[in-house]
Image: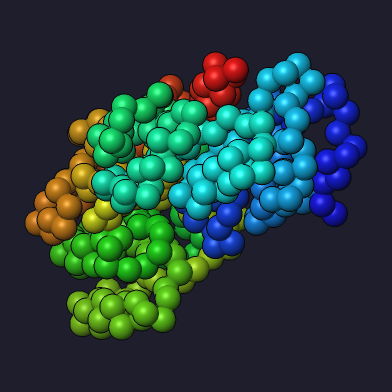
Length: 358
């Protein structure tokens, strides 16, 4: 049942409205939900859009927001509307300038590309702009008001106490696991992971590799070619495509993996690396997203140039060659996440910024 804005008590007034415009589950959606889970302990919030909310009563429609925001809070302050997508900026501008909503508009920018003229105009209407990495800040026409990196829920992404046992319980075979997770397509560097595994895995018989993620019909030919190459190499039982899995099955896979690759051509931020590091998996990533800022070279893992198969292969070989060093890198990554990349830190920093706008 949708939230009835007429029943909000003054002592329980909504201070924060989160945009939630995309019906497809994406990294932006995941980030919003994770941060919201902690923010709602600190501030009274609602979400404009019902997609994927664990508590449907927190959802509001556009028109409910219009009605609620015609007047400021009882203390005279304005509510905050937090947009993470361009269409959510459009919604915020419509709310404020067409319908007279008493709101402050904040936009979090993750893109690592220069924006179009219309997006630049929208961004300049915001009361504050947040960059989610130093890299994304470079693509903004004006300096951001804050750089606040994403964080993750460390209780959901925690290392298995015994990775070998946890991996074997998953049933994919082998003593240890390595993997790449996300949509299965060339842009995500899945072919680099597979080609490197074909080269490296025969040297390390204890390891099995998994490719975890949805395969769309438009990328099926790409996957079929990879599977044919794997079969020709005689590694069909050691390089496994799981297909799309329910979300609840993903954290246990991260927890059991000893190494995770993230080899995209480009990323906005790239939560995969943080999820892997939080689970004490060593990481092998490209110079995309915020990964160069997050990963300490040869401490948490390695960062290689985009689309550089020889570099991916060499670093994968190096990581798998010494299980003790691989474990040390995973443990170091977990400590880095605990110190700098928790969702609690992100949520608190955002709320501090919101309240500074009043």
